[in-house]
Image (cartoon, rainbow, N blue to C red; front, top):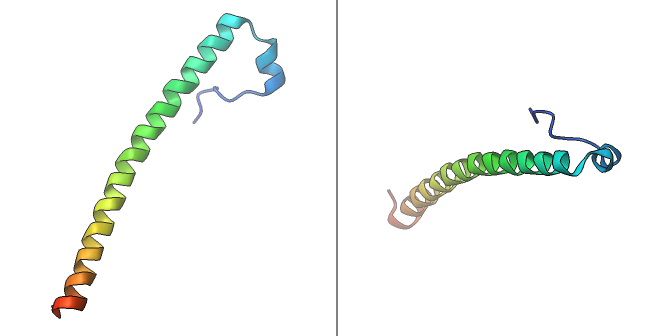
Length: 64
């Protein structure tokens, strides 16, 4: 699902400067979108780890 943004080096070198700029811009936008998704998943992951650690800590040290 790269929207045609993935090309080879030889093809990139043959492009006009304006086309290269547009391609780089589109790649940057795509990467930022993917990082936004990654940040959301990382937050969910850390929330899960905090809950799990708290549960294990309460069980081990307080005998619950």
